Length: 172
Image 1: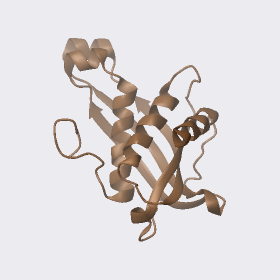
Image 2 (image 1 turned 45 degrees about the vertical axis):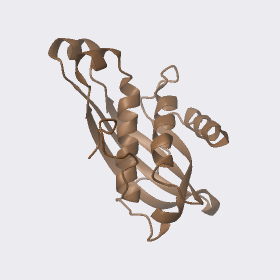
Image 3 (image 1 turned 90 degrees about the vertical axis):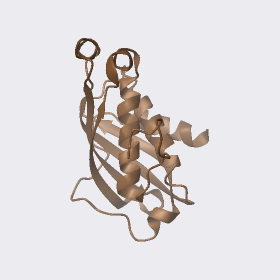
């Protein structure tokens, strides 16, 4: 609960200025993927609206996915700058029966004990289906795309899919 509160507090405080330093992709140092544990997720975006609950949903869902793939003991922080988010329109999905949610962001894994030293940097783009007419109309679009981002980050940084194969897992 303490980690969730920290993640939500930090994500809510990040608004417009990018929390990532930027640069070329950078893989985690050897062995860190086995020993890292994510302590918080910090989010920034140039379009983030404080009234929109995207920051809270994103941080919660990404943290949930990372808890299942980064289960070591060495605390790292994930800083994410969302560059683009496209959610399928509910009416369009209802009429056409399909649609896609897309998210493009850069995630940096940093060491809070070493003044935010960047340990890994991953530009990630995800695209996930809206789930058909009913799911597209009633589903939580932000949660769907945030979970997909979390799974993609798990795969990129830790080479693990946090969920077992099955109908509950949209990733291969």
